[in-house]
Length: 156
Image (cartoon, rainbow, N blue to C red; front, side):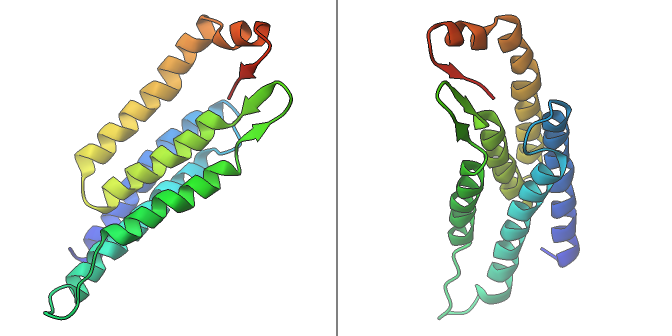
């Protein structure tokens, strides 16, 4: 992989993360357009760096480079970031969907950064379907109101 290919991978991740972030932004959620773009692109950048490091240093008989080590730390780091978005009060938990969206944006970024464009794009489309279409289905079925009546509510 060349650095120019790496830059293309970052752009793909930023566009897909932007699409997810735009959906969150239209609903006025705490993590919106820029946050999702940055998380997705940041994860892609870590993956691109992993791949470039393998190409640069992985060929020697003594040097063993494992690109999955960086990928595994992305999952942990984004989990920490997502934890800061989740808030709980006496009856409500808020931000779970936004935190999950950031986590998925990072995974999409990792896929784009690794060069799996179809997987990244498909993951982006499925994420938008889940957030947008299923969000409307939940609203129309009044899931939140039903849970509030039982005394405990889990909301975005």
